[in-house]
Image (cartoon, rainbow, N blue to C red; front, side, top):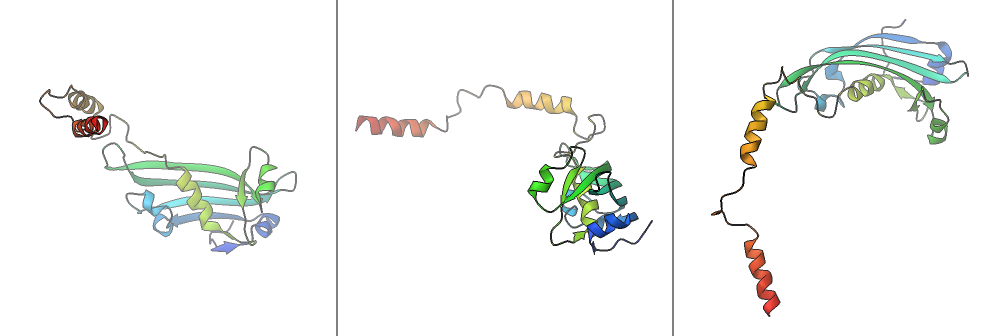
Length: 179
């Protein structure tokens, strides 16, 4: 087990050697993840295991655990999200190889024989964040019953006195038809 994570490495060599990296990385050190977070405080625990499977295919097992602070899309307040992710990746150099992988392996495209190891951790964290994270309804500052009642008022029939914003266009159309 290695605790120091190199920035870049040859993943085929790591697989042939059966390397394993285990440790933590600061969330603030993951620039693609930062815009998705309400706070980049904290760290992520990870395990990267490089190996070859029974078909001598190079694979990487990625396990990541972290508590992320994201923005609730209902109340816009901060919320804690537990990110626990595991992935089995098969190393490939192109789309043809990716299509031939068994279904239990996700393709990991390797360009120029080098791989940024920290990006594996960052990718798993990004994928663990839902498109619209929200507190549980009972924990959220915005109460759904209150929102639903407010929406019913907003959808009431408009006053008869209110002028239709398209009335001017209808008048213009009538003028053009009579010309």
